Length: 396
Image (cartoon, rainbow, N blue to C red; front, top):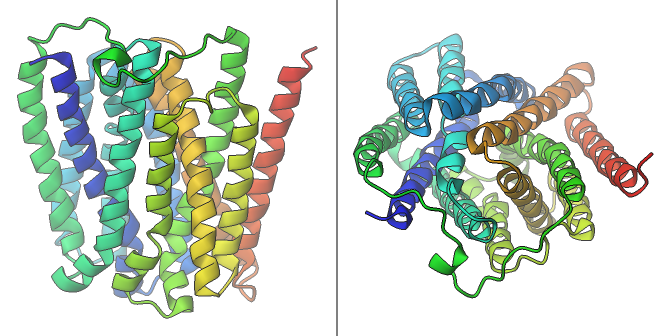
């Protein structure tokens, strides 16, 4: 087996991970609403607790993978998630399901940074554009399919499928990982370039190291704000569905639009590398993300909600792609940088829902207070990126 063939199998692991985690972590809020009467405020606080754990867990897991290897880290992650979901399937209490979600989150911390590292290792800069692009398209495409079909699956198979389905997938991942670990020992580890995969891709333009690091800092700042928006939306989707009179099945159909737009954005960014180290593309994406988020949660017209998802998905796609690409492009500690990238996501996963939940707690008579508060956070993030850019352009 060649390195190229081995990495193709890593993409299978990644796709399975996206399938299982999207179904569970996005539809757990429907489960909590149905089983325990959770509203937007309770779901936002639940989402914030997940983000708080992920913020520290992903950073630790990236360092763990750098020290002990990606295979050990992934095996630990898949085992924890499978075990947590099997146990959680038989629990009946609120505390039990919160514990299940947090344990599953801990397991997930060990997966994404180390999948990113395994896929990016031993790549020259031009080859890195190719593999990062494929990585983004795989998880984004599968997650779109999982969310699109998740509502229908939940209605057809019942609420407990939220546990049995993902647990089965994680056990399948564990078996595939053990097989790949044996195969990887015999694979030569020479770096390869994009010529091996996509001959038409031009090489990356060299950039001064100060410039590349400034874009990495801007991306690491922007990505948490992107996930402030993502996790806030995930937690309040049941409330959005009630506002638009949508069943879980139709919620999956309608509210998955931004998933597929993000996927399409990843495809475009993979085929065209002219966005690399271009600030105007980056800042436009942030503006689209902010406008799309605010419109999505504050407007009640279905077609405007659809249009807002298009803007949101495009902005999110470029911001996420930038953070991951610049993280992998600078330096050799792929797992550790992947951990920083995911930890930055964790900051957003915690901050957005926490602020939204607190706004609803202190202003319960304003149902839109959570969305307004998080929109304000995104504007602050936009200002922060502009400030970083000015400092880079006018160093002291």
